[in-house]
Image 1 (cartoon, rainbow, N blue to C red):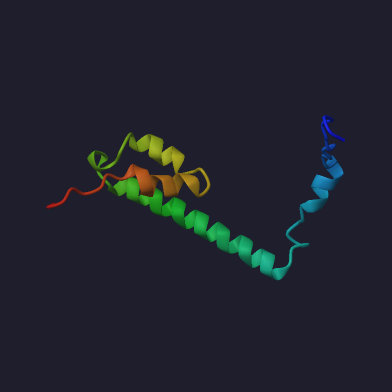
Image 2: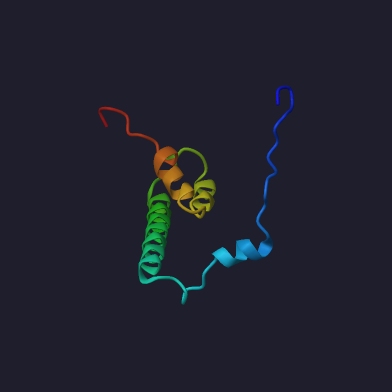
Length: 95
């Protein structure tokens, strides 16, 4: 079969198949519920910590506008982690 291109047909799932994967809270196992709760607690904790830090930290110690970081911190996980990684200015040595 030289010279002929081999193409595989991509099979996309139907809407029913996609929807069938989603479970309601009642259908979730206890460990899945616990995992969901732990992830939610981590997300809310990061959000609250970022918001408090933005409120208490002077604007001179934040890279960029406070309002932008405050809004960005509402993006799941990425926002607060981004703020703590890139939004806060590093103290200079000797301070």
